[in-house]
Amino acid sequence: MFTPGPWELIIILLIVLIIFGAGKLPEIGSGLGKGIRNFKKATSGKEEIEASTSSGNENQPPKKEGQ
Image (cartoon, rainbow, N blue to C red):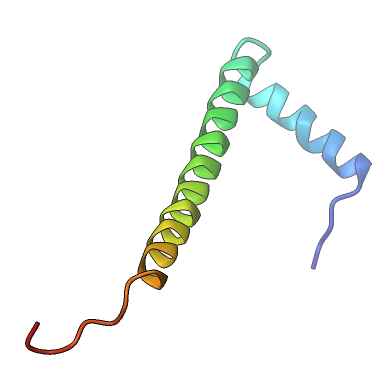
């Protein structure tokens, strides 16, 4: 698999700068940061929900039929 080195990253950043221009880069970075933050929040929320539901079921005895 291809792993980009520092020179490849610099070239990619220069191409992005040429395509989008210097004015759009802060907006793109802000949008990307918000997207990553929302993704992390959503994945950690799922883990918290799973932990709370699994811990809540351990304390309750199993239900018998007819009760």
